[in-house]
Structures are given as structure tokens and as C-alpha cells.
Length: 426
Ligand SMILES: [Mn+2]
Image (cartoon, rainbow, N blue to C red; front, side):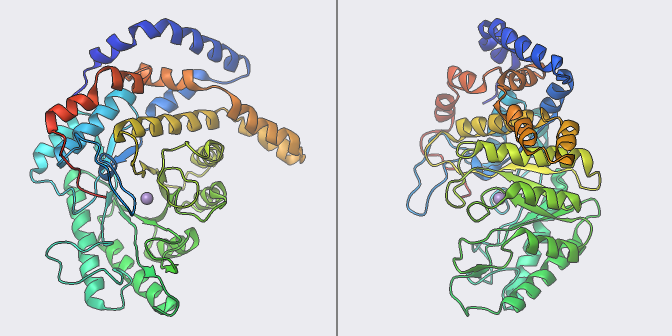
């Protein structure tokens, strides 16, 4: 299923005048306040977020999974779905593959398909949190940090294989997330487990191509409930530092204990040039993997404020790998992803409205009230016309969700793929 630009333009026709009015209003106001609206819109148009291959089908909970029908059953169909998202939003110009679920059968064909849809291959993800068919060793008690060297070696070899697959597709980074940890006190020796993990990561890092990044993700708990070996950003940063310059920390919004100040973590890592990747989602209690911006939009905005500041002031920090890492139990995954992409753009646009110079001046004289006002004025601005304009200028839809529904995409996908097709992955 492909969406042509003309279909989008036809659907947008009657909304254009209305949009122009809204855009002119906000554009004039911002220009009067000293903002360069064209520059903001260009930044928004250029911002691209990867969609992970596992987010295109229905996710599940520990209890059940309810299919969404018409799910992509193979890698080609997954890339086609990202193509639909990208055509509508012009923000999803990359896909993040998960191996072993997404091993291409025909590399040339997959690359051509992605190319034709303007989709790049972003970070590749390894999987040592479940046993794979044909594996000699089991990951039940861990992988890179396992007490048994044979298990660690198998997990290291898997990561290297994933990087090789990524290289053939044009990826430039490997993301490692480990489920390794314990559910009961005394189950392992903390120091030995960490030492083993460090040793394994170094071996993977030393085998990566020289233009590749290693992204080390952390998570405080789950699937293990007493300890996780890479539990927080500090541990991840420490491991990245022992690996080398091209190893960095990856922040996943859902991988924090309640009330953690994630924006401060972002600032700290960017100051050290060590923030390599970012996974978007939202949560109320734990790693809920809900639609971006659906629960804590102000926190997302504050995080974007630090990201924008860091991108402008920390040239040492590598270019970030952006990805949505969400799961969809109730909504059509593609609709959910459209909402997430929109929420990301909105938070980014608001952060771009913060006048960093004026903020610094207020900070210098400890004018706390003004500091707060500057942030909240930006947050309270309705930036939706800017985001829509950014999409429009590069051929996307004014209202992607509306066009998605009008074109009956899900119905078409069900007709094409059937009701029983099931996406591989989580
Ligand atoms: Mn993640």
C-alpha cells in the first residue's frame, strides 16, 4: 500500500485556506517577538524519527495480545507501513530493525524498497532477551553478563552478526538493551555481573566498523524485578566510557523510576558528549510504552528544551538516533504512531520558541519568576500551525490522521493482507 502525494494534496485542498489563516496569525505574532519563523519551520521539516519494526503490529501486555488485523507479516510490509507514515507525516524517514525478526532475504530488494519510500535504516537492535531457534545456550539467566562464558560468547556473536546485517543495509549504529539482571537478592554477584557485561560490550565495540556507534540502553527493572545490570544512565555512561569514544548512552523515556528528572539526565550526558540515542514513549507508572505526549506533555517539552540546548551548545555530542519505542494494545498502531510523531514535533517546536539568551540573562540575576515565565510562555503557544506548515512544505499532510482515515488505509491493509496477518516481534 502506497500513498501518492496527489492523494494527500486532494484531501488537504479544502483545509488549506483555514490553515493559511492560522499559520499567518502565529507567524506574525512570533515574528513580532523576534523569532525567525522560516528557520523554525525548516528545523521541524528536517527532524526525522525512526520507527521500530516491532511497533507496527499490535503489542501486548503480560496478559493478552489483541490483533489489529492487516498487520505487516514480513519485513517488506513493515517497510511499506513506515512508508505510509512517512508519506503522511514526512517525519518518519527511518526504520529501526530488530534482529532476528527482520533479517532480509534479499538485501538489494529491501534497500530498493526503502529507497523508493525515502526510508533510511537507522540503528539496528540485537535481541538477547529471549531464546532463538537453533541457539545452543539459553538466555534465561542473562546474556552479555551471564556467569557462563559460553552464553556470553553466543550473545557477543549475535551482536556482531546484527551489526553485519546493519552494515549491509547502511545502518550506522547498534543498540544494545539487556534484560540481564536478577529477581531475587543473592541470585548473582553484582560486581562479577557488571565486569562480565563490560568485557562483553568491549568485545562488541572493538568489532564494530569505525564509523559505527554503540548505543547502550539502560532500564531500572523488568523483566527482572530485583536488579538490572545496566540499571541507570550512570552505569550506561560508565560502560560507554570503558568501551571508547563511539560508545554512548541511549535514553528511553520509559526506563526510569517514577519522577526521575529525565531532562537533567539529558543535559548531563550532552555536556559530556555522550548522549547517542533517544527512545520516545510515555508512561504513568513504569515502562508503559504509551503514545508520546499522552500523559506528561510538559515533561516532554522540558526534555526537548535540553535537547535543543544541547544540539546548539554541545558540538562534541554525536548526532542523535531518534526512535519511537512504544507498544500499541488498544489503538491502530499506525494511528498511534502518527499521534506520537505529531507530539514529538509539537514539543520540539515549543522548545525552539524558548529564547535561550533571554533565559540566561534571567538566570544570571536569579529572576526565578521570569525564568519560569519564559518556559511556560513557549509551552502555552499553540504551535500546531507551525508543525502543519513544516509537513506541508515537504509534501506531507496538513492533518495526517484525518487523511489516514479518509483514505481508509487500515481497511486497505486488511484487504491486502487479511485479518490474520501477524507482525513478528513483541
Ligand atoms: Mn527502548
